[in-house]
Length: 525
Image 1 (cartoon, rainbow, N blue to C red):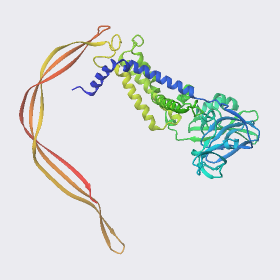
Image 2 (tube, rainbow, N blue to C red):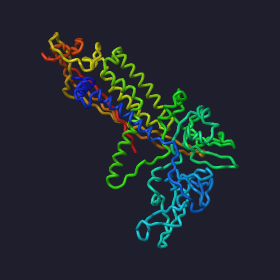
Image 3 (cartoon, rainbow, N blue to C red):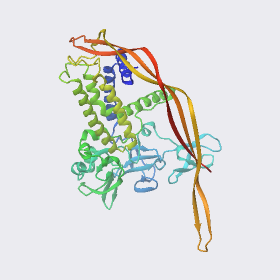
Image 4 (tube, rainbow, N blue to C red):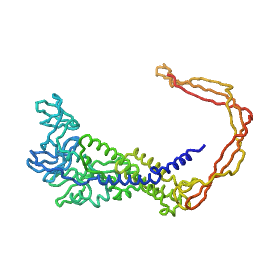
């Protein structure tokens, strides 16, 4: 019977005849998908602040740092112009900037924007007024036009904000720009706020303390020896920055344990591959039934491309080599064994580098296993045509792919082979023993009295079976056939052999007995 490897080889050679799923096409499609995934990721990353609207404050409004509690970092006066640069949907606030340069979050109700909510009395969605928000988890005290008062959960409030603004969602850690601590100190620290935001990522909060400007870069991930940090910078009167403190050190980052982490993350191209946008929302709106269908379709494609980006990126060089082996003039100098080793070495290096990069991005260890499994499966597929098997998929002489075909099958030789077989007749004896065990504990008191307990009670069974077998000697006539394969391009010949078995005799040679003992244990309550 053919083993599993030969069966896989047979199926693979059948697959190569189907053009759509050929080795060459699969490698080509994988290359295209990986490149498209990275192009989509690079085009979706937006580190620049976008002015979405500019309004006049209808009354005085506070600028906050919104976390679990609200902390005021500044304010805007009535009539002062406010630039809206994003939308924070965890507390329905605008990411905004005042004329004085203070940047933070302003609740939309403080800038005159309305909410809709379901009126408990009429069960209809209506405009609410006198909106007051409680702390985290956010709830809103509202009043409806008919005088009904209610406490509405955050998710049940409908902010009356334009779709353009709502599509530019930010978070407390909006956008991640990765940089090594040594590069941060050399290239960014000491520069002005404008230069830092131009080279890296914008600060989420900008405010003043004692006439000194402070900027919190929650989207900037600085990778140091102790993990990942978010810098808080203070600027002097000339606009030069100094490090005030590190914020929210991620000391559990698994990537900090990997060798060569600094060397890998010191490469700017690798850091840019794992950046994410400061805006999380979609660029376009999807209205109506057709719009929702398009949105679902695009969402499925996006998830697929994200998985390709995560799992197949490190195998891109291997897929390129796998595609190029179909062009013999390109890799003619490399033998099958050399290409196999080359792909193995390149794959191991690339998978390790990618795991370190994803680890620095914050990926947990369990998800890294998917990268390893995907890499192993991809490696097996890419290198299968290079295996030392007959017939070779890649000709060892001319390096052409799938040009070796079967020429003829001829009788080679025959010989007699002997084998032995045993056949069960019956059980001739069976003995069963049972016994119990338990732990006895005796407690003695100072007055001389004592008592005894029994615990850990178990029942043991031992079964011994003696079985009678008949022994047979079997003779086979083995015919060996030689299969000749020839390359259609260079004429190289290679040979394989297959055997056929024919039973010619079967004789009883005697009897014997075998004894088998099995033990079982069960607890007694």
